[in-house]
Image (cartoon, rainbow, N blue to C red; front, side, top):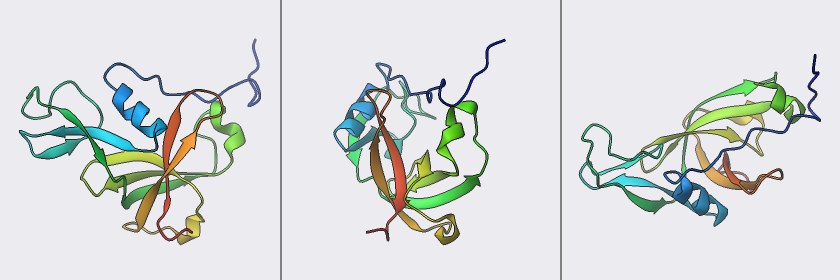
Length: 144
């Protein structure tokens, strides 16, 4: 039987696909690009080949600010998977971008006791040490 320890497991990383590559490339540039549907007049996230509800083939990649509000969060005191055992306490969250869509993320540089639903948050770009990928995290806007 194989025994896995935090030292032998690396965190799972996203694998960009042709469809999601513009999102990941933008993060590496410290920008956030998501799809926009002119026929819907809405920003769309997660990346997809056709607009939701209309199936229009009109999706465009547009840069957004990334600013938003904390929609919900939970403090994970136990690792969500063995890969995260060395991470300690994690603040898992959903941020609603000012442009509309919601984004699943992690809150960093924050005391969980100071978090409030609806508070303003800003993006933090984190280059992952184990791979050639930049992850999008968030922190309270009031951090300096």
